[in-house]
Image (cartoon, rainbow, N blue to C red):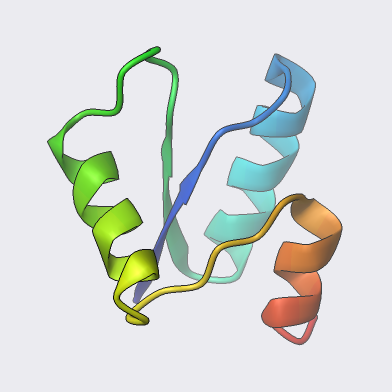
Length: 67
């Protein structure tokens, strides 16, 4: 199972993304705190070191996932 960290713009987007990821068997974590927690910091380090992907919005995310 893949894991993804998201920071939705609003509750509606959060609900939609969580439902879509659940159907695609992708675990998602939502960022809500102003300062990133440990898991978020690790995900950011993974992106910086090339182990993960950074996307600006859901359109870019879904194109990365080939959906």
